[in-house]
Image (cartoon, rainbow, N blue to C red; front, side):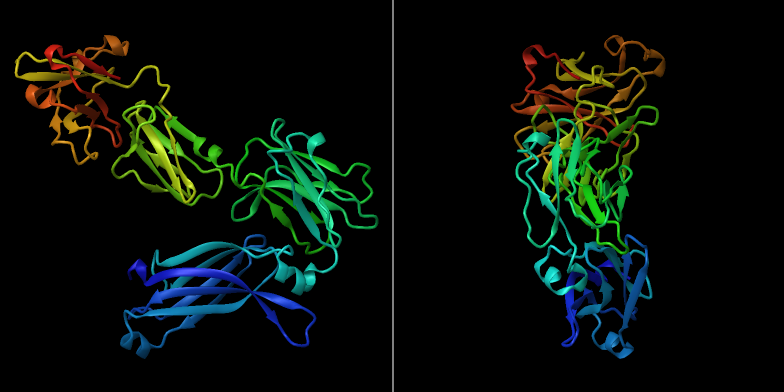
Length: 445
């Protein structure tokens, strides 16, 4: 069955209110769009609580006559039977009946907490004791002594926090509440559930000091402050002070020289794509390498990567894109390329130097036209005998391969000579442009 049978899924919270009840309950509405198919007998929607891992499923069936008569037509299905609680974190899936591998939709969802106007006014569990997180601008409150006035709420107990970026701590103040419950506060990384960064800190009702310092190591968008009263079935309130701090996500890049593997693993949930790219020079546009695009929501690894300063990773999300070049400061590149006169006056010789045997190709490109469509067919470099390749300093290594190219084609205006390795999975080209062919000699490294 084609994956496009399931078109889209939308999630929303609805209030269920009976005329004579004191308050309302919360339901999760799951709306799915699908295209009818003869093999499709129905749909199943499942909701899993990320705190308890408890799962509830509901299904609808499509009659056989409808499947045959309306095959190819679009249908919208609503599931309104999932009871949920305030501030609950859920993982929702919609799949076909019978289930076909890979044909499903999935999404995380967070039910509104008591700070939502409709929920706070109509849901009984929000009445009475309530925790309110009052957030001060972390950029203007770098020190505890500069934290500014506390937030005020006449109907709620208040918990305030400040971020001290210089010391890498979140400073929390739990309000005084004579006769009230103890409180727990912690920092956690918000994935499917909020995973502990450190042990929760308990603030007792009779504590002399109600100020807590929670250290952190990185400012990550999923690093959240969680607080809840020490009462049964307490509602947990979460706020994430670094939601806009995405820079640290793109720095978790590792290279393993032994197997030439380049890897990246997200420290937080990410929705977007990652790819390898190469850029001819600092600040230049980074051109994506073919077949390197990967989804960014899980760990990414590229095998047999040629470690060159021009090779970078590009991360793209709905917020923008970021480029990281892990080999930019590489003092000794894995190989280098030179262009010099060939024995034949009608040609130029492109020579590759490498500390170990390698295979290379060359092509000519027009630098003012769109890459890579402006490049001509590739020429295979002739590999030299392995015995002639030394294991010493790269600058002293003899040639590993060479190829002769027509002088009149290489010496044209705005022409670049590109060379790259072909015995790996991913290689960034080295490039020499605008050759002075009257006395040609150039080196790229």
